[in-house]
Length: 136
Image (cartoon, rainbow, N blue to C red; front, side, top):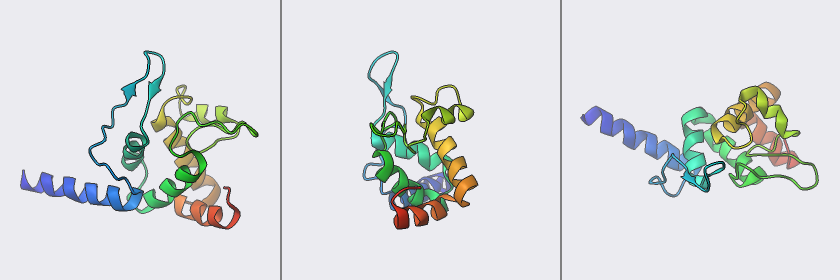
């Protein structure tokens, strides 16, 4: 039991420092806005990301998503139509990661991580590009 509790504290420390999550108590399961459309708090979406994105890439992934969508799963750019956490253009590109791409943060995170890895080599490299160009 001691070993498990140490791991939880270590994971929590990484989560707080890497992703800047202020409230570790935020539930990963979303509150339901309606039966059809779940509403996710930014903290719960960040917790999902911490389970998917490698720890050494999480801070950069966090920075990009914070700037692009403020962790809003349904964020839509009125000018371009870019959609979701990582502002995919068109948003329908994320269907390659799952049919639930419009509302599932895990699907969007997986697609975004894959995009950053394929286009830039990693979220860290994508963030370095973003800092210079203010887009990625």
